[in-house]
Image 1: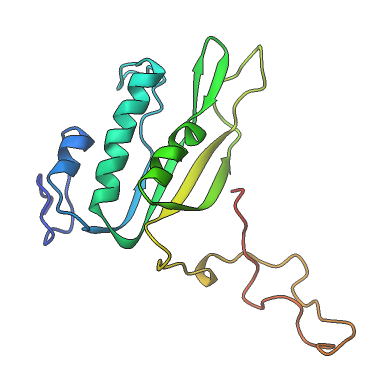
Image 2: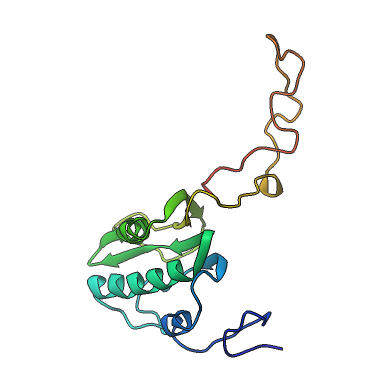
Length: 181
């Protein structure tokens, strides 16, 4: 069953309305995790291209509502690209960072998602990345590294000398993948 309205007892909600209107109906401190990729204001068929200041104002309103609905210790992952006007680029994560920090969130990672597809530019290098900003609401947040570890480059490597000689010099579960993805 898919609900059209938010209810904490519902498993799936599919709301066909503006995200701001939807968020305004959510009680404070409801969500543990918010993952979103808002429109980048590129003028695609599903969005109207706005002046940068107007676009940033709309994003600020949505971010405020997201933070309000986030539980203490909760996480927001905000995936965003660049705003391009007259060949000049504005990194939207940099433009929106003061909004998040001004609302008391702490950035934990700025993850770069690299890909090979996208628009081809002729007067600059083609953009082949987007940024995922991970913010937390406070210092008491949940992060589980072990499920996302990747294979070690030298899995059986051991300390050669010193007090740990012979012991593994890396985590046997794998290494931390780092933030460029």
